[in-house]
Length: 258
Ligand SMILES: Nc1ncnc2c1ncn2[C@@H]1O[C@H](COP(=O)(O)OP(=O)(O)O)[C@@H](O)[C@H]1O
Ligand SMILES: [Mg+2]
Image (cartoon, rainbow, N blue to C red; front, side, top):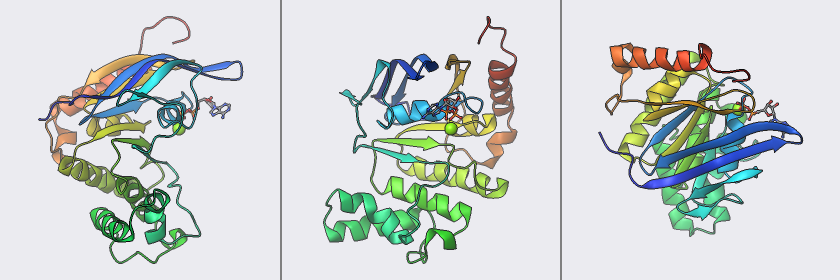
């Protein structure tokens, strides 16, 4: 199994308020250059807010976020994000959706052609280049969302519940496809989910976010070998970890307000 690599993302004492409402308090974590860190927590606890801060889309009220040593105060070109509801442009076909970021960056035509084709191939959407989002299933739209992020070859990939809007079978399929893609080129990833089993399946570590304001309640190391396949979810270490995270979330004997 690979190690986490050098530190790529540092979140230091992050705090966020919406008006007077504190949403995130004193969250610190690191992600290595070849590490997947899962963030799990109940709906509404602040997972998207945290991810948006790392993506430079929401500003912190306290603390600091650094990527490769650079302070995040705006979206950085080295970071790509995959959203729960796909976030595709409905008026652009698949090819143009995926090419958009590279065009914006002014990449040469031949490079765009080559990289977009490779990304489409990687997520299994070859042949659908001219389709519009509404002509694609939810699963295919999220493959496109993934391709659009991967084509940028980001140094940090941010995933916000990417598989929670697709059906259970598609979700399982996409989980293992993402793992396969990651195995072929490991990179730093923050994987946000409210599903405990998904957090354990994807992550090298699981960060349990809970409370109001949200803070880190536990961090669990996931010592499951990679590559991971379907067999892993019925293994004893997987089940133990899943139970452990469940207890972290729901059976925590913390003080008031946790
Ligand atoms: N732009 C905003 N303005 C005010 N409150 C917000 C905003 N975005 C989110 N919230 C609130 O902050 C809390 C955390 O939201 P969010 O980060 O979306 O949680 P999660 O992704 O874990 O479901 C929720 O109570 C939500 O209602
Ligand atoms: Mg969310």
